[in-house]
Length: 253
Image (tube, rainbow, N blue to C red):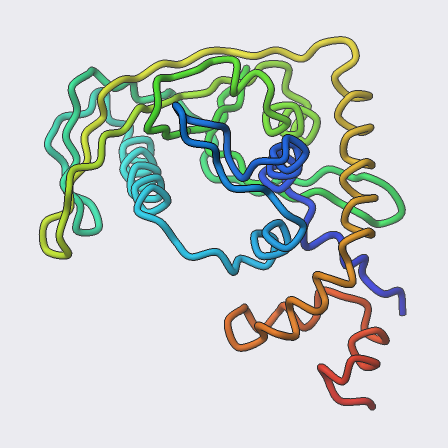
């Protein structure tokens, strides 16, 4: 029986963008005078294995997505505030557009080579474009999203020619466990389109990322072994079966 390529577990548009950030040398783009931490191979492995601690910003992103999913599913014509979701109070200083959507939260794939696939989930789609919701605590910078590999991957995955980003600038109030609140301070949307060399550009970068995964594989295995109680059970199946037997992470037949 053919062994599933272990790299399939890490082939997502989000991870591809994380690799692009890794190549800058910093964990995240610099803000002001403070230099961000170095993006090391170990930190990248931690990210792939979902060992990084959750943050309030991540929680807020999930809550905002939940709010938008609810509005889309109920075909709401507008969005009124305040809203309350998952213990959070949401307010907004700006009007929010509820996208017209015929498909929401759909899984998609892209064939790479020899059984290797990229996996993703689109937030929304209609007859002529697909799109995604993004949150930021900084001033909305369109160039950041133009440079992303995510939208290019999703266009290749779906065959669409047009991608739209809905971007929300968020201010998170000082909160307690009983009183959690954030405010949407700004909103923008913009469209991106397929271009002549997009497929080749994207596939070239995907193959570069694949080579990097091969390079860090020993560190990934060590990290998985050392943190086996902190990661999902499926992690013990992400690498080649024989290699895991040799590490004694799982029992021999």
